[in-house]
Image (cartoon, rainbow over all chains, first blue to last red; front, top):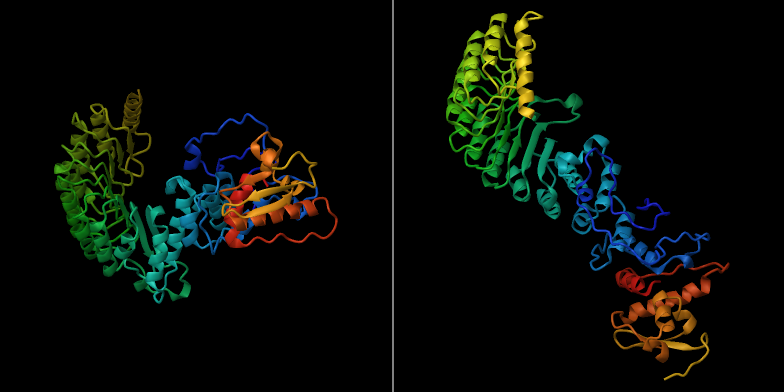
Length: 437
Length: 103
């Protein structure tokens, strides 16, 4: 017997979905108007009669509701029923209804919350990532499972038909494996609300059948993705980390990305991109660019890549977050990158950790930080080759800088207890307090 | 036009949307809260003993009256109570009418 919604001692129905996560659901945040009742509270639908098992004591309305619920599969439409009865019906509906029907006919958030909590693990039930609505969470997760379970022989038309029923609720397309290698542009064509794509072509639980060729994105996938990016008008965020992507795949992807005017976040970290790939990415950062966040961490970018990006950043005013962690920039690459940042007023977060940067980069950096209108606020220089002399240069520079509030200098070749480090720390703290006031 | 008569044996007429007329005893009709309120008030239905239901169709009204008989017969009864069957395609309209009639 599915649990009833409100506790039976309180006849006034609550409209709250109830909170199980730290963020309250959207339906709870929208305040509902509750009418004040002046007359006696009416007998509720579930009157607690002592002779509970007497079917003649049951109200006719309740009987009807039970019949409607048991026939929901064949006859799901129920327009024109007053709201309190609709809640009764949805609270009794089973979780395993056909999604095609329930997407169209069931709108009660409490039902979707129940469905999610019973079929998903708690870590998957983070409504913050799904627009604060349980229905969206359910369907994005359902789509992910369907895509990940799609095998080569399955019929794609059936899948697309099913997707059409709940296409309004998918804002983020996500999967961690795709053994069927579905055409991405056909998929995104049937998802009109899509704003974020997060793909990874791995294989889960493969065990002894491991075959390297099964992993990673293929050229066909990249070309389909490029087409969907080109055609889409509301795609803003693309995350493609961990796809064994090399320069050729990136080039294929770029053909679509160049034509897009809506992408603001691009994440190609943990791939195999080299300088040639970075040259392509730098072309994306032209004067008309709208990209605000670029993540190329953990690739194979050498010094020349730093030069291309530095050159692009000179004329770019959209990028605010650049992550180049764990590449092979080396000191020279770091210098060329930072020289490009000199007149740039949009980059606020820069991560160059793990690139073997040294003194040349430090001098270029100090030029950047000395500028009056430098906008850099968060800087990550950890795991590089900065020495005590470099830290001294930086400490002198920081006296003239009022914007930077965070500089990570861990795992460098500095000695412990360096006074300059403490001076830098104090200035950063001072800057941060100023920012808040 | 019926004059005042003792209730219980007295009959009332319930008219469906299509014009079908159902004669039921007053006691059976009073199972429904709405009908009871109508008959006990000073509305003209109380005098004439005829209540029209222009929104309720014949089949639904018939089923509703069957339910009133069922409830009256088996409330506080110790005999074995049979199930009250509702056809699925009628369930929706029956729900609306039972909501209106407070059944």
